[in-house]
Amino acid sequence: MKGYTVQGDRILVTGGAGYIGSHTCKALAYAGYEPVVYDDLSNGHAEAVLWGPLVKGDVRDVDRLASTMSAHSISGVIHFAGLIEVGGSMRRPDLYWDHNVNGVAAVLSAMRQADVSRLIFSSTAAVYGTPAQPGLLSETDALGPINPYGDSKLAGERMIAASCNAFGLEAVALRYFNASGADPEGQIGEAHNPETHLIPLAIEAALSGQSLTVFGSDFPTPDGFCMRDYIHVADLARAHVLALGLDRIDGGFEAMNLGRGVGASVVEVIEAVGNACGRPPLHTIGPRRAGDPPMLVADPSRARARLEWRPEFDDLQTIIDTAVAWRRDRRFGVTSALPNAA
Ligand code: UFG
Image (cartoon, rainbow, N blue to C red):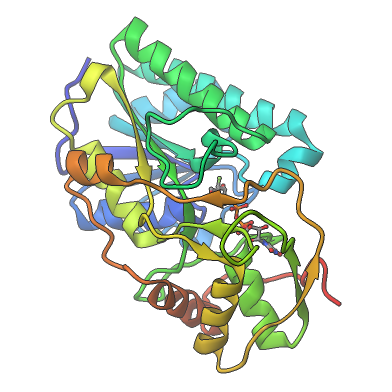
């Protein structure tokens, strides 16, 4: 097995045509790595693959993954490819278990075939489920997803940890809180279709005059609205590069939270979007969305210590400003009508 990766190495980025994946490719390229994107383009965009080759393939296809790793002399893998919507996972759990769990199994199997030993895994705060008490979530807190998306990601983490133990692989699972914002240089940004995330939908509402539905106002939080920890996508991207370059991975597998450690409610997000757009998004209060925990805010101290990582975009308004700049001048992607537009 090879040791930890060094600059100049080629890194396979599954899902590298997607939102966080493409920003990570940019960060990899700037750090001296060559990203090789592996993506089926079902949700990603070929236009977002700007820093290395694109191989089209299904993430559950072990043979294609292994032959891509060998053909490109890959020395590390960052695995993003998967399904990402909490709400979608409640409606189609079968798809989430298939893509997210079988995808991890295929990546692990291909890595062993191609003799690649280091993996960075795109995980999520959804592995924590509904925290037992309010406060910052640390990696030692209880894990208990409350939706199939979180279940499938936690299963992926566990499969990876077992493979590290059994086969000598080394992996870091990065548990993202709410990825947001866009490349400050405007080259890439968020372009899901259909879009389900709060910030792009609130921007769409502000710019189009349609109304956004707020999912619930009776949560046990200070203002009654759901609270999340919004972290800039470029800060997330940088953390992947740092994890890839770690000298050693304790016990072969480590999990780390990536967030700012600061919560914002849905209404605070709506206000910041209004500031950035010059007019507030119209919104109405609807029922809660199934599977939404009231509050998810990171204790990011482990990532700070282990990766010497600190978010550079450290306030919500700046993060949202980059998202609005991308939406006003985006280079690819369309936004469908607001799902619950009034
Ligand atoms: N929300 C609305 N209206 C909308 C969309 C969202 O009120 O139209 C609310 C949600 O109820 C939630 C908040 O805005 O309270 C954020 O919702 P998002 O859909 O933007 O994001 P989630 O918190 O549901 O999920 C995101 C990622 C997941 C990840 C999770 C971790 O999509 O992959 O953050 O916190 F697991």
